[in-house]
Length: 105
Image (tube, rainbow, N blue to C red; front, side, top):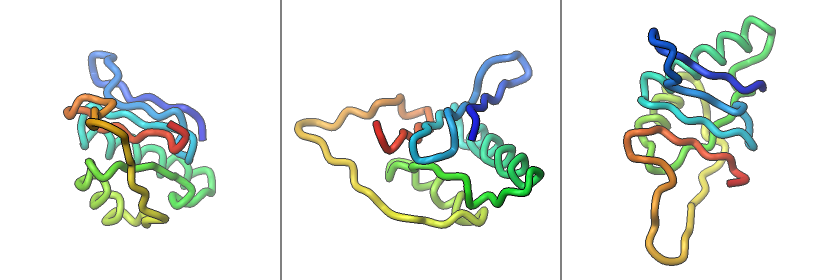
């Protein structure tokens, strides 16, 4: 999976992925931008003879709406993981962003 970026009408980045696989990460300004990115990637892969099940995202528990949308769109949960920290938890991304980290993060 290649890196991909979604731009709005003004040419501003609203979503990107370094690759929809276990070592890639994805960031979007909104759930709509995330949905557009995923739908584009899925249709692009489908046009090339690949199934959308080859797309893989690490969805944090802090993004239940994203997880529900993915399941309703035909994606399936492969495994659940729990993020653990020592000390106070400080999210990497602002709450307004959808941040799907690489599993290697």
